Image (cartoon, rainbow, N blue to C red):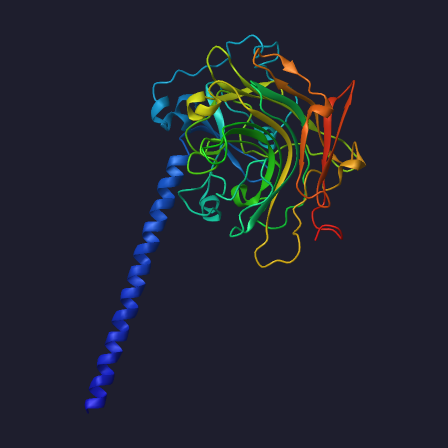
Amino acid sequence: MLNHTVSFHHFWVTIALVVGTLAGMSKLSDIHEKKIEQRLKQLNKPAVKSVHSPDGDIIDCVWIYHQPAFDHPLLQNHIIQMRPKSDSLRDKTGDKKTDVILQLWRTKGECPENTIPIRRKTRDDLLRSDSIETYGRKSSATISPTIYHLHGDQTEVHEHACVYVDYGEFHGSKSRISIWKPNVLNTGELSLAQTWVTSGDWDTGLNTLESGWQILHGLDGDNNPRFFTYWTSDSYGEIGCYNLDCPGFVQVNRYISLGAAFNTISTYNGDQYDFHLTIEKDQDTGLWWLKFETYLVGYWPSFIVPKLADSARKIAWGGEIAHYVEGRREHTLPQMGSGHFAEEGFKKAAYFNSIEYIDKSNNPITPFPQNLEAIVTRPECYNLKVGSSRRWGTYIFYGGPGHNPQCL
């Protein structure tokens, strides 16, 4: 009888523990879902209109003064500057619409005046990130283009094939960047082509403004090349983000959506597509303007990147990949550029052409190829070739396949 009583007691204790555990799990699940809901509300502003892109994106047309930038305490009373004041930035095509459809979502519509297009974030977007709170930020393992390898205890490796000018007083960058869709098989890896405008250093807080195209499934949920921006003022720590994923960048344009996919992509030995990208400091206001083709997209206020308040120290152009080495003996396969080496040349390798930096007098300067420093972290995996011509100015071909018999 005693044994039956003890067994009966153990049964109810077990039931109580299971029910208690399930209740605790349910409570944690509820808290998690509430955090997701709150973060999505923070990221997604009320839309005047929404455009459904063929790739599944939803682009919300948000009233220009309701954009995320105005969540920043120093921007709450900010009056949007629709145009730069510097003459060098206000050219004849600086804010005019072009008939060329550059992004996929625009094939289905456009945003009304006084709104800006913002790619809607979803629950799945947040669940792919390292954490809900850090969504929109680069991994802490991300490195600057001047560092070859990570510390021994880290498993994410970034590799580069890029050129740069350093130790100057630069007010910006200009170049044309070809658009490709390299293979990036693992969801946590990336491949990109971009410009870096930087000042400061890694230990005391690197400040950088970045833009170009990238494939990053962990952020966007697919393998489409997308136009992007990034900024940080603390060496990719807790300050800064992609696109409009935190307060900082102020967008003024209703035709270009940061983070949206391109409508045209270059093909091997076929049609080639590129875009002109400018990042330039307005002398009169201290704002760093981003220009995509003929569109003035918006600007970064210099107070969010204080080491860039006067000028940039370094400008870089080129490609980058990230791959994981934990538990692997071989190099993985994120391709860079077209996935082909630089020596294959036009229509086969990716390129930057019309490369210029902007000096402290706001004059565009074409650097001589011999005056560009190069970083090629693993030439057997990815490489580059620098040249110049009357038509292209100073240019680079760059890229590579990643894993191959020489890249192990």
